[in-house]
Length: 466
Image (tube, rainbow, N blue to C red):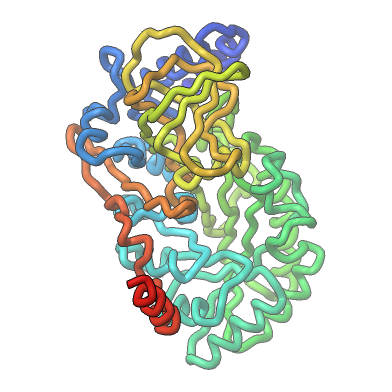
């Protein structure tokens, strides 16, 4: 299967030179080939299946909208990524901000993986899901004191410190509770990841990490503190990268830094390269993990460093879809609108990044293609899942699948417009499992309270009306 990525790249180039039905043709080809980039969403007699389960069957049981994940795809993608680094000392820590459902975390943990966290809440989820503390790395620019203490007491592998003040605060907390924190400094290498500016993290203008020119000074400070044990160097330059070269540019800078640290007598055991490897949403042609791993290994040579890798999107992105139902069709003089029951609160990426997600009918009808916007019920003009998209004409009641929604879909969802969060479902073979129940209206107000003085005012008004 080593030549499949090259084959697919060629297929894409051919298809994108043709205008007619290129999206549906590409989807069919992708669904029929089993390799890392593919998934287990496929058509049987013009009906979309997830593994061996018709998507309509799930919709009838749980209602719409909902997120649907393929267990086989999650397994396949994790093993393909982790296996690409099998010749190197490494730990694959899933970036759980991309998808923090406990069932998915448990699956990756069972395959030997750890997690990359960015909050105390993510730590709590990870531990409840059964992730080993010694396989947890804590990143993020704004770690609070309570979260630092929680992570220290939990015995996590390492903290990726992102500022001079955080280094001092981590030391203070560690000394106060009688712990010693393993720490890496997240270095900002000023490398352009060539991605969307909102998900670029490795430039000097970004808020993340410590400028590489200041790193030696901060490592010297960290090494002098009793509550810290300097264990590694960390870097993450961005998300949805489709080229290897930015990773290598950053790695070369990090290796020079590690060499200088060792000259200073500071031993480095871990090299955290972060995540960021992209996926195919539309026309992107990202490198296969094997290509990525070979490039990194060629730069590292015979290094004794233990790599920490933090894949997120590349593992779960194409392993999940958002299933929604058409409520209304609304033709106007300017365009056609398909109003669906999913909205920007369920899938934020199109509204936030103007990102692309393929739109597929759950049942192919053979109707003519139309140019349309796919929009939701929220009272915002920015509430859309797709704009100006050529899709098969839908009728009210039809189901559509929003593809490549496994990463940053549910994890970024909200209850905006007081819309309860939707349910998540996992398919394994010919069975499906609800891995997160749909919220109810009463869940929306849980924890809220009306103070007595407002209750008294309401009673008085009601009494006056009586």
